Image (cartoon, rainbow, N blue to C red; front, side, top):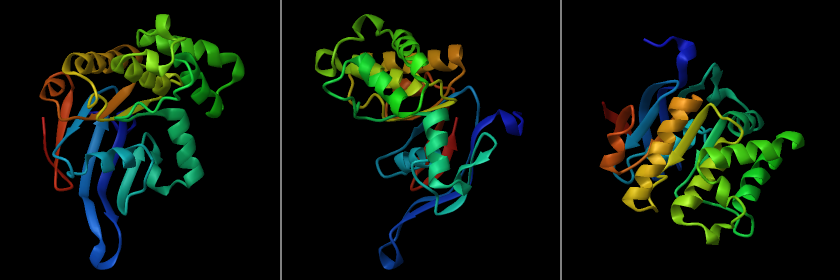
Length: 230
């Protein structure tokens, strides 16, 4: 069994309620989760099962209503907003369904700009951006703007942007939802390479059965709870 230090993320009794009083809706209902470092993990479940809410909590974008959430040796639920922002900016990478690229910037500029606003040293930004784009197979296309790239190339740009600062954890919410099955499978194989060759832990949400055959472990959510894992 992994030691405490070998878990990238641990959740204990996580609840998340939106609203108050009679209008309150509890989306997560006591989630317990321990993800070993260096794994490719998937959350699956129907729309409304709580997958995205859980990803947002793991990525320090939101706070649990109850429970404890630990990232490495830090308790995220106890950190200030500023401290959580720093953890997310320096140690995590986030990818969403929409590629969220700046339309007038090239692939390279999209990656470099995020490093810039993240406080990455100026002398290292160019090297880090090019390295990340090369790792996702886009070095030859790095001067193209989003409208000149295919959907898969745009998603790979988003991945390059998310890994350029070498995060410990990469979180992806339905990263293949806007892609055809072949391109989506290529993206998941890229995640597999990031885990195997760069030691980045990856947690994603998906509905795609083919993807679930590639990941290390699948957690199924239903009505705000983890009901199965395999």
